[in-house]
Length: 276
Image 1 (cartoon, rainbow, N blue to C red):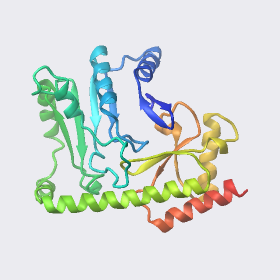
Image 2: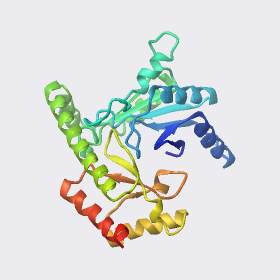
Image 3: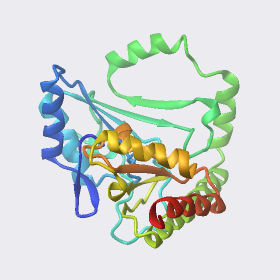
Image 4: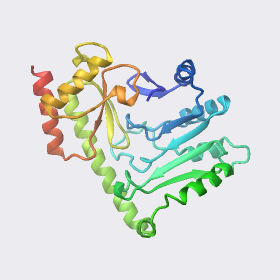
């Protein structure tokens, strides 16, 4: 989120925000070698549009950088979305559409995926990295020899993803539950008159708690975080940990929580901060 720009109730990827982030890094004595995108985005829970993804790829190529697209939430799109909501587009599609022959995405694009989020299999520690860069493939082949996924794990995953019906049923149920929790969280925030940025994917959204800051600083944000933990027993990720440009934004994760727990958590926030 360090290179996202807030605009009209959502965070956007713009040429100005990318250039600003690049120059900040250069001013600190670093020459950026890659741009890392998480799509759907963490922490906003939204997907990048095609123009934003094309802009990102054009920017990295202009600067001579690599582009790493982490698409670990690719299959966690919500079911409640509105007509104008952006759905997921893979950087693979963008790479092909911007290539000369439409057959290769290029040596500068790396795409990540894993089973821990969409498939709820974090314990297996299995992921996928797609690259057409032959030099990288050679190096990775040598390194992966010492950290290979076990044969048992590969066998399990092969059987799981080969069952198309099971995969469809799982993803449909998972997305439905995520959608229901997200709608509930947004409803509870509306009732408390707490601003937020609407999520359409993954398992989190960004909450604007700036009005509860005692001071507009990162120290003020940390104090608010401590109060949420100590007085409400609620943990929201501080914006500084997500590299926001301004204090007061928090990430709210609603994936691993039932509806009763969500209601209790926001009732505690209401008791401490709203009805004080």
